[in-house]
Length: 176
Image (cartoon, rainbow, N blue to C red; front, top):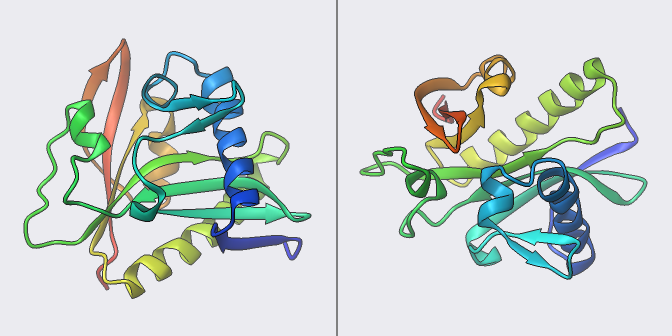
């Protein structure tokens, strides 16, 4: 475990690696999914959301100085949320929310290591978000990921079908 480092991406080198990982995970492996269909392709090898990076926090797991996994959260709730664009209804009144817009893990980790590493990574992210005054994290996941999100403490709030895939709206409380 000590070989993994949890960071917030703040430099171009790590950001480019993150975008390449997004392309590999979503552009190549799931080209008809929401992320691949709604992100901008750069140089045929990177994916980037249409939201400015100043409105995002990109949490990452690094190993051997390379970004291996990441979770991106949209933090500007004055802009339309990606979840709202998908068709979900989010109550943003009187709360400060972050929206999970992508999450990926490396392919080469055994399942038990993924759970241990992501459990610690999740604690790192949620402690940071709570310290910044956020109340909730909202995200969407495909039906086959519901168990993972439930294990992490997310509530499943709503389900809708998008392009033949069931998407689940999830919420995690950062309060107490």
